[in-house]
Image (cartoon, rainbow, N blue to C red; front, top):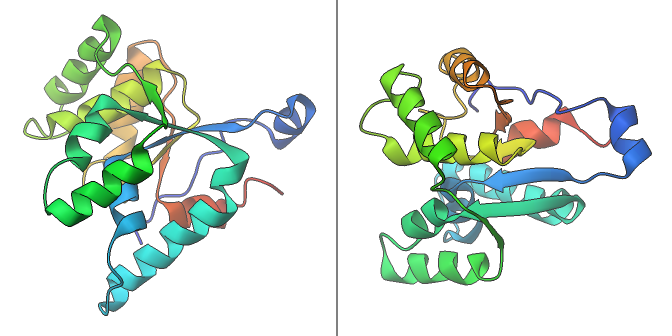
Length: 181
């Protein structure tokens, strides 16, 4: 789909030894595809299928996180769909997405053109996931987030700020990486 492969957040052996669950920040596009109406468009149907497969098979093995940025985006748009998104988001672990470190990293991502200047919320998704030490940022946003051409710049900005960039992947790429084996 987007041509981005998961970068393993750690050695498999380390994960097994500590019985640690992956910490996954699910960006808004994931939740939109999870609750979206069935589509007859083949590309949309594939995204829906991978999203639901990830939710059924991988999510139970992960710690799932969101932020106020996810909630704000999820509340926008079609009333019926936004209500479905908010219902599935209710009670999820919410990260603080507006700390001074997050503000500074989001600003750096925008000013260094790792994220387009008009995509402020995308910069905040990356910054929130990085600052809170997420292993994975799960998204269907292949324009600005899970984009193999943009990712090196994103990683460089996050690293320069002193943080580790989470693997930024689609549900499809996550499942194909098979992090459990």
